Length: 275
Image (cartoon, rainbow, N blue to C red; front, top):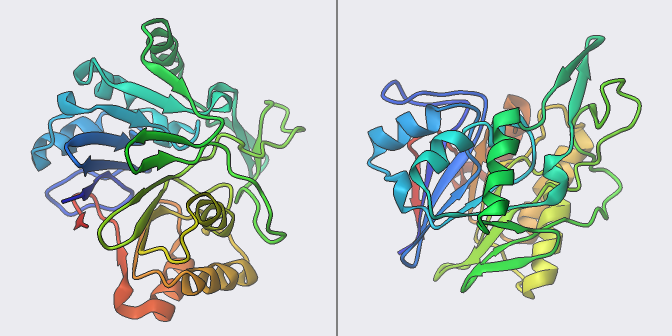
């Protein structure tokens, strides 16, 4: 049995805490994997309430270097002392956004970078520029090629505080693994584009169908054309379970729900899916 539990998301039932961030707990054939860490210590509090023991983590994967996916790392590695961390090297670089004329630093907090550096010194860090099989049948994509003409990173992101050099977020990566039901894909924010990501995973695996796609899709400010092309890709790959979270946006979420009806669900904190 393979189980995915949402530990952190923007939305949560009253019994759990929410924050702008994302984290999934994956139990996979006796291994325990954490995909992203949320923004703060909410991950630790929700894990305790859900009966998840962070000390059991074998691997931590960071989807990219933004604060809302990496900020909870101190809570995680305070417990998971033997876990290996997987991330793309560009996740360590400075990251900024500019909205309404204001610049904001949105990269890894300083303490997160310090933890990453200490893990590298202890031999508990693996860089993921290329696809890596972390455990048998459990993979991280590494850097995702950008092929489509309608997908961008989703917002105004930059690598300098003057906001002159755009950040293409090459560090964006996804997780995929094979189950008895079929291929399952987990997305952090899909800054590389949902369609780019799914197309790449299909090329890597040789699979023609994807059973489930779960996570953030960064369609919050997407054009109608982009949302429609994303829906068409989900149909093309015959996706049976679509779990939407974090940065999907209400408009895109509703359109995807309209297109797929009972196949679509929201990844509230505490949500659990079994495969």
